Length: 457
Image 1 (cartoon, rainbow, N blue to C red):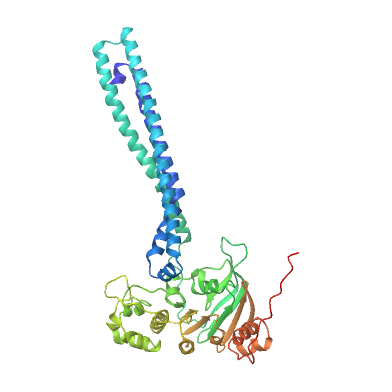
Image 2: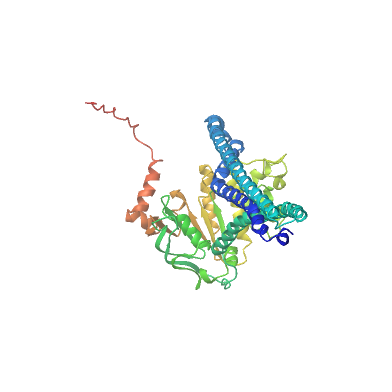
């Protein structure tokens, strides 16, 4: 209406709304930048809060007096977060004050123009009154429009980040579909495989070749960081080699349906998941789609020598293993590893075709007698339909493997049977002897020499 009364009022109406739009846009941009900059700070604060309250850290929190240390860090982080919120509030107040001042100046100029038009006879008093009402209602409507557009702009910033995240997730996701995994697989082969992680200069694996025949027990040993875990991920199809090939039979893993491939792999690791469900479901979850009752799970429980563990639970296999719930039970580390071994047996025993069992440090929490028994049971899992891959630092557990591969800095340093590698007197023999020496009886107790005092002069 104001534009029809006099065209000169239209740009002034836009000038009144423009400072509000600028102020709202600036506040939204600062808030977005702050959120993106402080998201790791917020995550770290939540992590410290969890460490202060979770059971796994409770012993060190109390005995090592970690609680006050973490709490002081949490308080400092809270203070810095509060300071950031105060900065944002102050910046918002200043921006909105400047925007309101500029908008007020534009409004004053608009009324000045209207006064000049009235005094010059270009606008009647009645029309001027109508124009005043039109300017006020128009500026209010434009202000509401600006706020809505600004809200959409702020949300679009997060939507853009979300779209980038989805694109990156799509690029990294394991593809679906592919060729079926052959029903009969006589061996799994790695041929000159190389893999380098994006954040590392040296390859985790460098031109590694090995063969896993079905029915065999293969051991992979090496120091920490030698590439054992990466090798297991390539064997199971979690990673694809950047150079070289991984083949199940004659089929390359890169061309196979990965879900079918995963169905042929069983995994038992040192840090396997302890699910907050019943003991029965903790075993069944090795192959959750396969229905089973207590009697169906009994062979797996007996195989893992987990019978005494289940017997002491208040409700047997139906006992809930999650202390976060009322009436639930908790297991020790060794007892959990027996449940994990039963889970692995359940998954392997219900497999419909040939596959691979990957066992990574399975006995770290077991006593020596239970460790020896566990290694024996794991080796006995090998069958014409199953190849067992044993990854461990316990050299006594790999001496009976059919073939042993020794990794060093991502490369295959040695391979052979225990007798062959010991006769070669290479890296494997040195590792085996170093561990054996810890148990060899010493003829005399060595006495350390007195310390040498160096003259400070």
